[in-house]
Image (cartoon, rainbow, N blue to C red; front, side, top):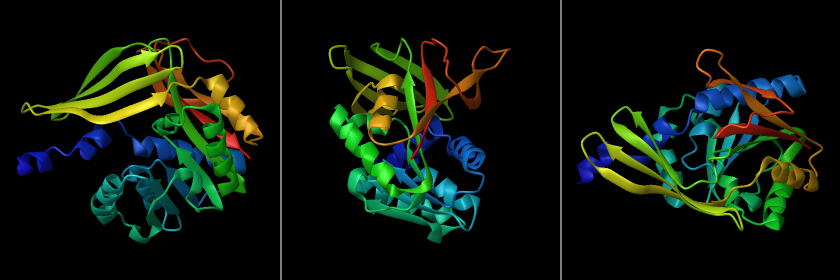
Length: 263
């Protein structure tokens, strides 16, 4: 069984099915330069998990430095043993176990809160406290990047499956409470050789809306918050992977966007 688990590593499967750190860092690099006119160097990845995004950042330029912050010892250890050895710029990536609200890592050009993990802050005051801590961690020219998801299927109880190389990825919105917008979600993996990683990852969080998030960011002291919405491919009708600042989104069943907040 130990060999099977090593062959089917849930962190690797997560990276292959959920994350596309190359596209994410492409967006962050381009958007930062468009807004600020220069290149960022110092990045903090909050709720970092294994720190794959931070690793991609430091490998883009030998001058780049990143800090991966998470409370989970296991995922931080996995990142140190599986991400760092493959980096060209190994010295550029630092891991820290800490509450993201009190990591002590300041003077950042960029702070990231991706994969919706900040949704675990389920009341307004706690979320604003986190946003204030991010603002205080940024340089005056820094930028806070977040992602968010929604759409009229986001509040439904549903399962979605997608075939990946060697396994099936299953996103499970197991329950949703419309009274408080709290929901239980899971990621399951089923490998092609029949191993079921049921509830490989579990998320209990609040489905925040974009107006709520923008209001809380303003309350925390951010001066400008833009929503970057994904364009649509004319042929497929699907997202084209190009995100641009927009005042109008489309009423899709499911969408993912970025919020870009300036102090």
